[in-house]
Length: 123
Image (cartoon, rainbow, N blue to C red; front, side):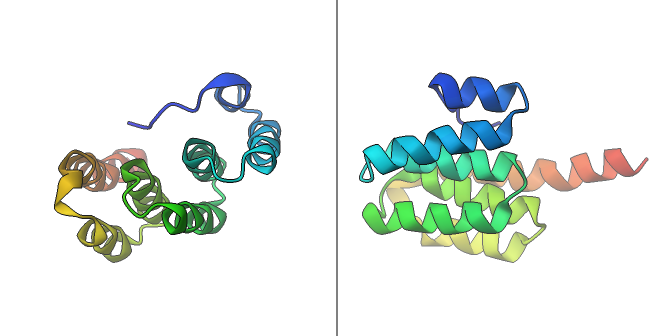
């Protein structure tokens, strides 16, 4: 389960045109560098494109702007999970404040399902 990247970047990414979608998001970010939504969408797009290290950096930049922006913890956790960095993903959950319970549960579900999905792929 992933948050939805909206607008043209989201359409491009759904079509598998990740580079173009990321370029659109970078352009949007340059026009509105303080937008938490654009920054989080860029982190998500980078993760979808398997650019996990860049996704982690983007997520951290977003958290520097607002450490209470819950969706970014999900994005950061996803980048860690995709790299099988489960301890970092769990540490990411611990960093969240108690007001972010919903995002914690989403991350826990993801942490549970990812190894199961990996096992199915190996069959």
